[in-house]
Image: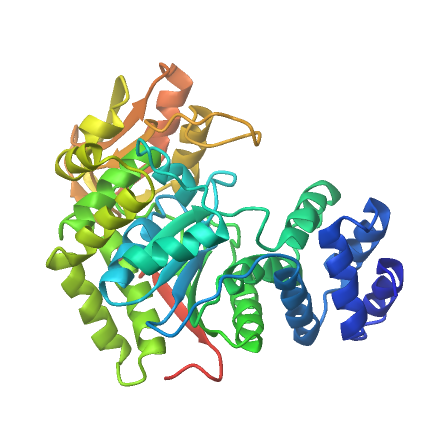
Length: 443
């Protein structure tokens, strides 16, 4: 049965024959399906959707199209995935902190997408850090130091790579079953025992409404659970940036601060939240509260920092460079030649920080891509001096924009408008809005 015939099942709202769907995806991964046939099937799924059982079969078929990481007996194998946010640097701290807690963390990550930053782009701002690991090198690294962070590659779920490229040019990106299969296939290929999904919602997220985020979270949890992975989704707010530093090199600096037991409480809280959930899922005698305490402990006692150092050395960073990075990160990463600080035009209370506006301007200055082959400027970004709800005085610094190119009057105006000051007291929205669990996840 070919893709055209499978599309007919989808259009009728009927489950696709499992063996036929598996065969179709295997042929896609092998390059044996022409573009029109694959497009017909993609458009049907995009328009009509498909049941969870089809999504599970689709995801498993994508996994089977490429390499899968295999692990012997030992500590639990865990990971997380975020749908992308402004200032989302959790992986840089989460992977080593979990390794310090005794987990194995084979983290596959991506580059920036649109206005949101990518974990790989941040790590590649560190001189010598090699993210291009083969599946075999990932297993070796994790077995030696507990964690690695590697860029997604063609060896894992190649069928997804083919379909993703087609989705981009056929306007079928925003399909919950296709998004689910794309994300979960790559994570499941890591051979995970447990997975935390950070599904962001708000004006600066891809899923802007809570309902959209909830639908995607439920789909991913059900699919990953159907593949035998304990999974929890945390729906989190993405309107204001996370933490104090935005931009590739600057986010590495903030991550190192948190690994020193210092830095942004906002950033630290999300790392602890995600890690605590994974520890509780993989140790049935541990509550989430105890899991969070364990995460707090390794961030405070230096064990997470030591795991980060081991991961950096394992992935190519020279020992002398690493020593300087840990002690004085800006001397290794560099500093943008221009800094523009925005001052409060009046006294009042910070009502909002427009994450999308800030990220968009940074992207225009080289912090993000418009084309796949764009070269990033790792030094571009922001340091925020205030948070929503803070009282400020006139002429008090609000944020500093780090940039390589000069900025014009219109861009300065955009920076000023990105921080909203009013007179009303503001209660900050909690980051965690809802947890979506599978029926097999321990309460």
